[in-house]
Length: 288
Image (cartoon, helix red, strand yellow):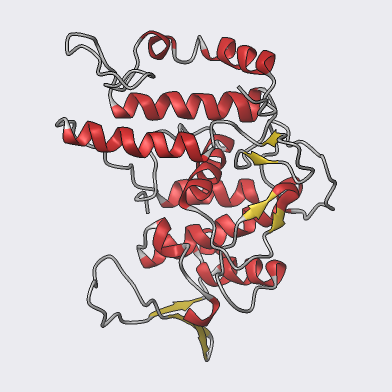
C-alpha cells in the first residue's frame, strides 16, 4: 500500500483512546458486507446506522482533538509527494462509505434517525463561545501550523458558522440550502436585508417569496442573521459568487468560487457543539 502520510502509531493511539468511548463498536461492525465484498451471514450481529455514525464521530474526535489533527478535510498537502494532511475520518472515502451504508440500511428496512432540532438556548451558547476573544480574533496564517484540541477553527470559520446558523434558523432552511446561497441572492431594502432563493424544499416549482431580514435587538444578537451576515461579509470581503466558501488550512477562505461542502459544514458544526459540551451525534443537516 502506498504511503498516505498517516502515522500508524498515531492511529493506534487514537484507537486505544477510543476503547473507553465505543467498546461495543470495536466488536460489532455495522455493514452487511465484508471488506472483500462478500456478504456476511444473516446470523452475524450488525450494528445500526446510528451506531456507525457514533463510531465515526468518535474517530473524528480522537484524530481531531486527542491527536491534534484538527478538523480539516483529509487531503494531499500543498507540498505534494503523496503527503496527506487533515483528519482521516473526514475524507471522501469515509463519507462515500457512510452514504452507501445508509442506503443499504434503509433498503434492509432500518428506519433512519431523525436529526435533533437546534434550539435558541444552544444558539446562545454557541454565540457566546464563538465570540470569546481567543475564538473570534483573526490570527495571521502560519504555514504548517497544526490545530490543537481546543482550537479547531479560527475567527473566519466561526464567523461563517454564525452567519449560516442564524440564516438557517430564522428562515427555516436546511444546511445544504444555506450553502447554495450566492451574493446576488441578497439585496438591501431600507434597513432590511432581503434574501431571494431560487430554490426551497417547500417550493419545488418556484414562486418563492423573499425573506425580509431585520436586525434584532441586542439581547437577541445570537439569532440575528443581519448582524452575523455583516460580520462574515466584512471579514470575507465576498461580493460575488457563493457566500459560504470552503475554509482551507490556517483558517483561510478558499479563493475558488466553490461552496463549502455539507460534509465540512457538518463537521465544523459538530465540533462547535463539542465546544459547549453537547453531544453532536443526534444533530445533522436537518437540525435547523
